Amino acid sequence: MSARTADVAIVGGGPAGAAAAIRLAHAGARTMVIDADDLRGDKIGESLAPSARPLLERVGVWTRHCAAGHRPCWANRSSWGGDGVDCHDFLRDPHGHGWHLDRRRFDAVLAGEAVRAGCEWRPRARVAHLERRRHGWRVTLAGDRSAHFSTRLLIDATGRRSHVARSQGARRQVHDRLVALVAFLIPDDAPLTEATTLVEAVADGWWYSARLPDGRLACAFMTDPDVLAQTGGGSARAWQTRVTRTVHTRARIEESSYRLPAPPSIVAAGSAVLDAPAAPGWIAAGDAAAAHDPLSGHGIGAAISGGWDAGGAALAALEGDASAADAYARRVRDGFFRYLDARRAYYGVEHRWSSSPFWRRRQ
Image 1 (cartoon, rainbow, N blue to C red):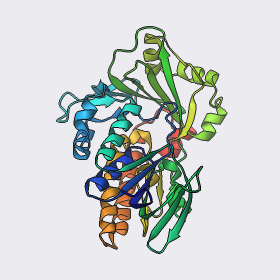
Image 2 (cartoon, one colour):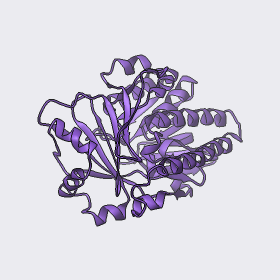
Image 3 (cartoon, rainbow, N blue to C red):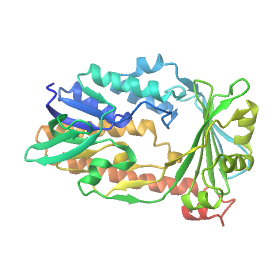
Image 4 (cartoon, one colour):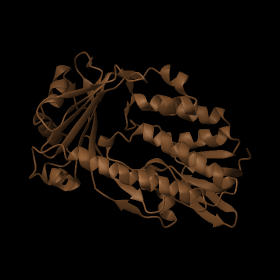
């Protein structure tokens, strides 16, 4: 592919962007990915359900995924709607176990498959300017005014920022403002041996934790911004205080003497959908199109599926199907509103803290 032209430019190199790139490149479309990831720090999103196996096979990375050293996850456990712990194991799942991921390795496998298929991958690159033209776009990259190219179509895979879509007038319809306080804990003793994901509801939100392949414990507290501010904010001290109010999360932290090496990060985790997930000339994929509460399980697997679907819509648009963008947009929005019904039902199971602002907003 010429460095100056592309059929499709994908802005964002996460699972959604990579899946779209793989589908497009395998179909022969001249595809470019503009990936702003600077490769520093941890990437959030560590759990992959067994149901992701058919997706990984479809995009052509199943064998390399299995060889990448991810940690099997044999069950999801939850303390939700009562004080006990329910366990949903994967022993009878037709797709086998799930995984706790090394996200850097996982994303590298997806990017590698896109490149093998013929995609041009531009790492540590950012879009400085988009110019709409008669037959597509002129894209200028940051840091070098000569680094520009033309493309017929854009795919927005920039995550919850929806950078491309919002620059074209699309608006995000926000349904809640959930945030995640995320930390990666280090063990002072032998790492946790239990290979499960744990979710625990508490009075002002809920907790998630999973052991990573390197022995650390990914741990996140989900709540609303105003609740977070009223209970100490994002400081390390407030984090430790919140942990003491849990039962099952605290037990697995104490089992291996996990400690907090740095203050946790605050990241957006709420539910939102674009009023227009696609339009002539561009398509939004993954979280850029519709973002979901982590409780829903609409995580990495959904990002890959959404990116694959966006890649298919892009192929149809390149072939002259004027209805492709509208049909894709309807699928995204219809799926999102089905998700809202399921989300409402799941939060409705928890009745222990009916006066809590966090739970009252969701019930």
